[in-house]
Image (tube, rainbow, N blue to C red; front, side):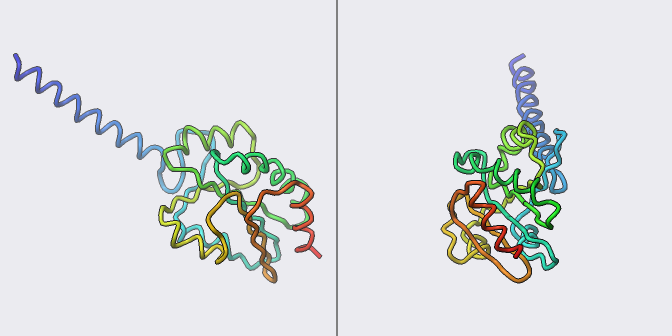
Length: 176
């Protein structure tokens, strides 16, 4: 009886371990978070780097943020307003989440859905921040919020929070 009970317990433990692995795999599958209505694209830095080097006629506003960063959350509506107001002026806003992968499904995606974010949101999942932060901008300390605004002819990095007027003023410099 004891051996049988121990066998059942051991099988239970193994099956729980397999369920945990299945859940982890369902969160990120083919660079997308599943189990939600929102398809969050997830990149390591090598995959993400293309978003920093577009050479077409658009102005790109790339904001680095996280749901756990209060100043980031405070300024996100300004990026959304910019995205809406400047979409016809060839401006593209990209919101790059630095949230931890374990929080994609329970914090990040619900936030995106709750706030009805219209800008493109991607997650950057590359734990070796010391290697890629300097590739975004050599003066970046790694603090967020941080924003890169660039076009094919100009590039400017900001390690600060923005008001809507400040953000609009900076983007206008790229349009003139």
